Image (tube, rainbow, N blue to C red; front, side):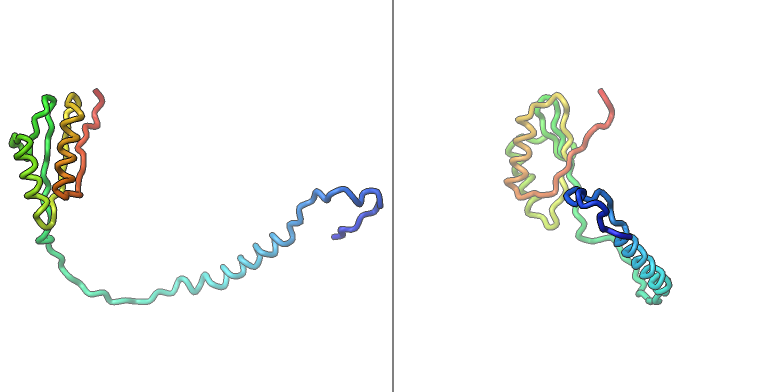
Length: 139
């Protein structure tokens, strides 16, 4: 494999060939490494793990559902509340350890202001676990 030029006039022209020899060399080295290391990977070490029965977490947080109707009425666990009761209940939930997870279910026709008020009250109470219940069905 020569890189010399036959004609001196072609000396300034760039060489348009890709030298694949180093690529083949690297691939052969990797193939040899994989052939040597593959049998070592099939050996397993037996580990005796302890067996335990795990029960339910006694401090598992409950879930609170907050619904906002189309007329702006707020319901906490199927009980209608006004804005003062909402803030008081959310403050109670924020003081409990572990904090409950809030699930918000909002009617499509409800005003954005009602949702913003509930979210602001939850943030002021220090609640961080929040989720939205959606309806996947098309209209």
